[in-house]
Image 1 (spheres, rainbow, N blue to C red):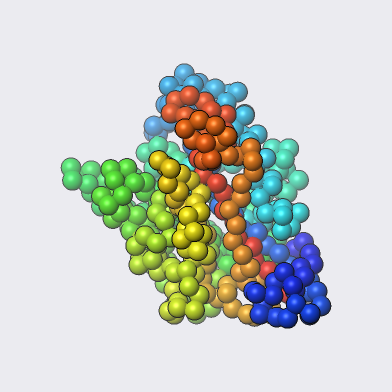
Image 2: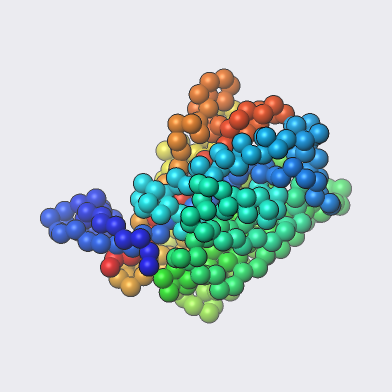
Length: 349
């Protein structure tokens, strides 16, 4: 059974369109999050990938001490995400920039997290740097039914070379009997420039969208959650035109997705920063059925960017930015160069 909390109708009045004079109701609460863990490698060379800079004798001097410090920092953040809504924190967490399953196992066994008994869904991706995506979930509340990686085959570049990138991770699961399809993404970077690299992100977006379309053919009431570091903002065409996600609930067409992060981005709020400009690459996007006012199912309540004071750089050229692990090749003792995001789903009891 999910953790039950009381939410005053007054707090939810705008969401429920209900008078604040109504009595309090009780809800089940589910938090679903995403976090780019910023090059979370172990300290061992993994054959076939280019992880040399993240080794103890590499140029970043990624020693066991650095690894454990980063592990402690990440676990402390994951422990706290969503606890302002529910003391149980996150039911599901998608992650990116992980080297392998072992770093996820280290997280789940960490003292800050082991009481939640998080389980792992992970597949090795073909990415040349060896970074993958993965999913952590609390088995007390989320049951995995099926999963598989969806291959993203990029077109050849000008020299005819096909770069390898991360798979899209698809996980079909159940939350309190409600089927939900989760897609964890880490779309190709903007290396070479935003415009020049945009076609690669469009390919990744199409892989995700095509699979969602296949689900809609079987069930018009699909519950889908698309999360990840998209390396594009909510207003870029990979999101709006290819993934077909928009920020205005009232103007969505049939089978289009709802993107709550458009409103954040339009206010200048982001999850990472570069040259004094905020970007919002870390998004969690949902199908319209998760907006429906159906008493027997979970539905979207709100979206949040999680940040604590110690996760924010307090001085220097990155002041106000997420406190990153490295400043170029110098260990900065931070967490990640991205802030995590999460959404809350609620269901009336």
